[in-house]
Amino acid sequence: MASKALFSLLLPLALFASAVLGESDVTCEKLDRATCAFAVSSSGHRCVLEKHLGGDNRAENYSCRSSGVEAAGRFSGWIETDECVKACGLSRETLGISSDSLLDQQFMRQLCSPECYRGCPNVVELYFNLAAGEGVFLPNSCGRNGGSSRREMAEIKSSGEVKAAPGPWVSFIALPPTSPEKLSAYNNGEALPPL
Image (cartoon, rainbow, N blue to C red):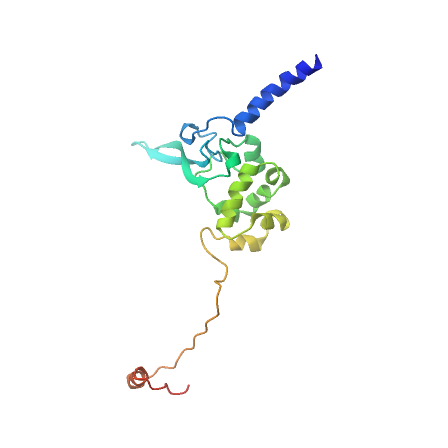
């Protein structure tokens, strides 16, 4: 009798988990506003929520579409849970995909929290790749002060580089003003006068 009760409790849980973890057919364009952000289609592309202004009354309309950003194969057909959205400091109203939130120390603390970092692999994989695109290794950033390292944040500049370019240093010298005759002499192969 106890095994039947256990089975009746585990079956709905298993069905729910399979729906959330990728066993169902997920098409971004069929998702509503409440499930679009942070979802992954069955084809493996991340879904993005978009906002459109429509008509004369400028009503806001939302649509979900498939992006060109691919998720790891194990996340195909994934609709992110409300628990992970909350634990990671996310919002179901997030539009598009951007690394800008990586600049927010409060967001980074939540992303690096054990509840999010260890319990929400889809979110972590997304932000791991966004951070890598900005030249930052997310595990290192989370390891330093729980994701609130100012140095790491300074390195992320929304699609801009902060790091020094590789290669030899080049120094330039400024020459004092000179006459056109002296410049033409230099152009003819003669040496410039000493400084």
